Length: 151
Image 1 (cartoon, helix red, strand yellow):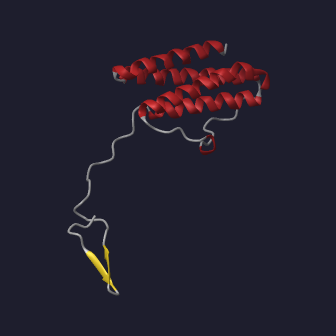
Image 2 (image 1 turned 90 degrees about the horizontal axis):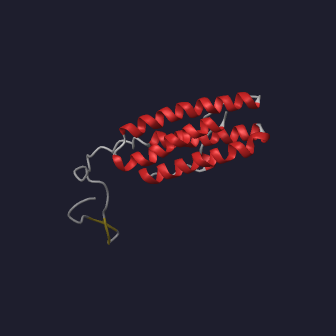
Image 3 (image 1 turned 45 degrees about the vertical axis):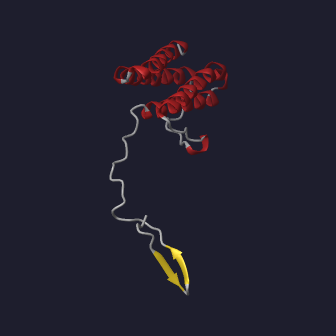
């Protein structure tokens, strides 16, 4: 803002001037993204992969639906912890490949995604401060359980 209360007078009417002052800046860099942000995105991608597989293989929907919901719940809680809003369903673009044509292949692909996601959650848990470790540990355990449920 301009300092000193500058006024602009046009046609006998005075109006206060406001604007940006080159010397009134906050030169602090933006904080880096939270290290858990990739975990939010990964959880959302996993949920989408399960929903896509359930749509492609309706006979697996009862089995895959609860796991998709668990990943959405993980994303929701992670987003709450780091203070970000989840993107709306319409704003998220599918990030996973189309599910395999055969149900067994789709389950194998989901197991592989879960294994990779479990590894990234394990790494995040090991690097996290104590107040986040319990949440991440539960996500690691859930992802291991999901792998077993897909066999």
